[in-house]
Length: 279
Image (tube, rainbow, N blue to C red; front, side, top):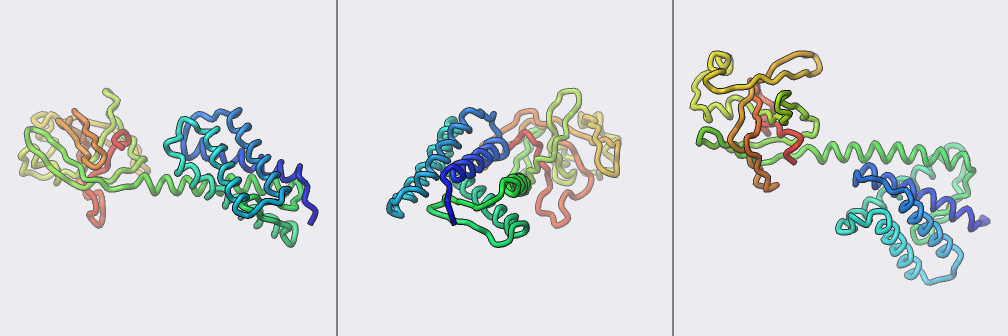
């Protein structure tokens, strides 16, 4: 296979730009500074050419490749330099996705794959159209995988402490970024808790079916909401004195708590849904 330095530079520069863009936009979720990314990608492309065209020891190739990744990330996301290890791990993971995508696309449309890998630098004997298709497929795969990872990460259990009327209850809560319910007047997010878990805060010995009779006495608010299958509904809520999540060292004063009449978890793993602003 004939190796062309300009193609090595182009392939690795473009791939590095996409990797850095996805890293910044989808994982770090910061403002993308395109000039930084372009410069960092060019550094990566030049390093790739040096590794392929120079007869240097293998350990030097790996060292140069590692230094190139470190430099590219430092240039692109200098403000996140304290999270450098995380950035490098994500960069390498996403690099693997691009490589595998290109191999798959090439094998489908171009027969046997012409490829050389040297110290993490990849060279493909690839037609321009297939290269573009591979990058598009890689971007879609990366986006979907990151979305799945984020959704999984955003579902975590926490020990939550509620204080109201000089009484305290401790329960297990699930944080789900999909809980965006707000009280419309104050704009505060609403954490949802089962009635059976909070009724002792009021010294109540009645069922939820009777709560409307005591709404004024309990100083309850009415929060409208919409869900799939139920376009209009209301949720009774109260303003708790405080809500604490010790693990996250978070304490919210005057937190809105929505009262739910049924079980939130079929297997009773949790009895509250944390609001989106708490984690």
